[in-house]
Image (cartoon, rainbow, N blue to C red; front, top):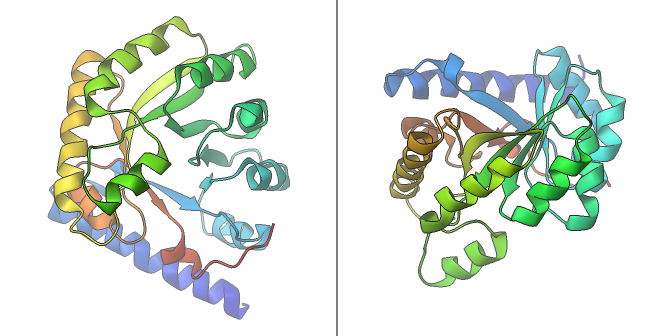
Length: 236
């Protein structure tokens, strides 16, 4: 076994254990948690190691990477797109990603619907942008997202499009602060959405630095990269 394989597998085992413990401590089952391994900037060889270890859910932030890596992996891999959506990249994104975590534009939803092959669906999370103050508000604005007060109306606007499956809400916690209050707000927003759209019961929140707090507040999808694959170095 190579040094790289050993490193990845050790990290993966630790993350799986932490997910298990966080779920149990929250009165939940680890089976409720979908681990999406974020492979942006990491080579296909790393994804192959994770695939052999049983992982099937992988996420990319850039179409330039996802469109290259997806064809190189077996068909049973479930690819997630979680970066900011560019209108001119939508057709390509839809060609490889089954789940899109960062929808915040009705026109993008329309294009995703139109690009999805007949008989298929694309799963969508609405990206929420909670109101923040100070410097973090500028970062949040750059990330995009729908204001909480507009989430229900936005979700309603998606019902006119075919081939789309609304899964729920996605959010990215601010850096450098206690993420728990943020995740509690996101969970409350998720419950409000589910009350109107019962099938939208999933919550995509939590990354390498805060996923245990996210699990404690209802996350069903966590998006982890560096905690499994280590420091990033650009490869594409």
